[in-house]
Amino acid sequence: MSKATDVIAPDTSAHHEDHDYHSHIPKGITRWLFTTNHKDIGTLYLWFAFIMFLIGGAMAMVIRAELFQPGLQIVEPNFFNQMTTVHGLIMVFGAVMPAFTGLANWLIPMMIGAPDMALPRMNNWSFWILPGAFLIPLSSLFLEGGGPAFGWTFYAPLSTTYSGDSTALFVFSVHIMGISSIMGAINVIVTIFNMRAPGMTWMKMPLFVWTWLITAFLLIAVMPVLAGAVTMVLTDKFFGTSFFDAAGGGDPVMFQHIFWFFGHPEVYIMILPAFGIISQIVPTFSRKKLFGYASMVYATGSIALLSFVVWAHHMFTTGMPVYMEMFFMFATMLISVPTGVKVFNWVATMWRGSLTFEMPMMFAIAFIVLFTIGGLSGLMLAIVPVDFQYHDTYFVVAHFHYVLVTGAIFSIMAAVYYWLPKWTGKMYDTALAKWHFWCSLVSVNVLFFPMHFVGLAGMPRRIPDYALQFADFNKWISLGGFAFGLSQLIFLALLIKACKKQGEPVSAQVWEGAEGLEWEIPSPAPYHTFETPPVVK
Image 1 (cartoon, rainbow, N blue to C red):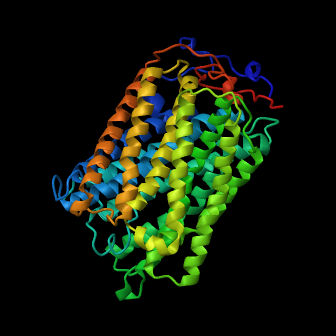
Image 2 (cartoon, one colour; image 1 turned 60 degrees about the horizontal axis):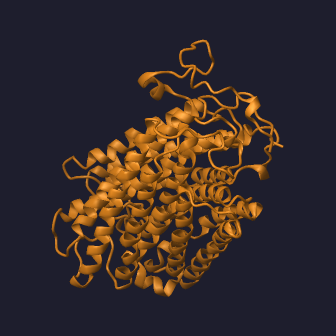
Image 3 (tube, rainbow, N blue to C red; image 1 turned 180 degrees about the vertical axis):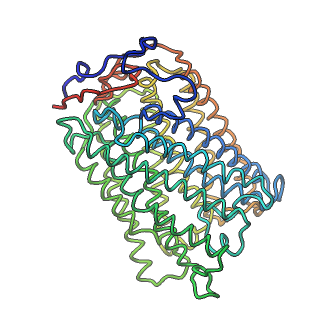
């Protein structure tokens, strides 16, 4: 790859006073409100996601405090249900997805040699509707009747017949989140299709760009399905329709089909960008090219396609015909093949590589091991006859938290540790980073691993009380939960230090072994990059 350093605008971080210079950075609050710069919008998304992560985490702490001992201890059962619901909604739509969108905004233009995202004003709008969208469900917690309490999957009739008046607010907020996601996805697709640097062919694109392109198509395909589901919930609740009410000729199971047709691709929306991040980090610290680049691209595409035909594995206990159970069981197991290809390729990349264990690599290795555990418990859940035992127990909770916390969230942390020096121009506090990693790693396993056992023994999820035999396990799970929550405050301290630009200055390449266009521009990344597109050889 040619060095692109000579064809980009020089670093202007030292020229703030030069108003004639085209890279002048606006000052004050208006910079953030009206910005169309992809780096600023990326930063906004990332900070928003982190704040939401801490709020969602605080709700998880309420859940775990209640479950520390058997019996109803701290909160009302109805409030407990509100916590489980809003925790799920915030973590999925407010923490994981905006964090990946923030990374996409920051990195995709730099990786493909584009000056900015293709639709910068829409980019600004797609971020600024988010804070409003999340204030709505959060504020509903303080209204009479409380917030949504029907689980993040809002199954009918819980969300229609038996829900409070906050349902309307919940539906409105989901619509706004969906609009934001669709706009972000359109932006990513148009940028990648139209703004790649000369010579950046499809099979030369970094894997992070590939995974995000495929994710963006998934988003556009499934977000309207969610919009349809929530609109039907709204009309069932307030306008007397009966889409999901058997008494009026509807079908409550139809809700589950519509929801999971969105919901299953959604969980892949939350993991595919993670695969892209890990595929950038592992080669860097192995000092090798990624093993099997083309197979990684095809595997990502296969996972995305298969994600559309597995939705009913969430519904094995609803009484579907045996032939459907068979189909969804085998289709679900089939997804493990391309996912296994990915894990194999990461391990093969590390094999006989010249490994060093910097912070991004530590999180990447933790990701590979723990995500694989989450994948294997998913394969167990795919087997129809045993799913009757697992269904709606803590085994399911353990499964999806292994893929979403030690999968998606660990990959986001890996990404921050990997690209933060590029963003700030300074190396972060590595001592704090080590503390953050080890505390998170130990506590997250104390938190989620025992859940497999209480789940197998039959402890139901979403219930504020439990039988006495689960008491010891739950105590440990809760202690792990509090420790994991506190560990994230170390991360907060590290990020605040990094934003104050404390630390050793870093080179343009930051990491020995890092390849790609983003490592050819100065650190910190200038406000405007690639005004003249680099040529990729």
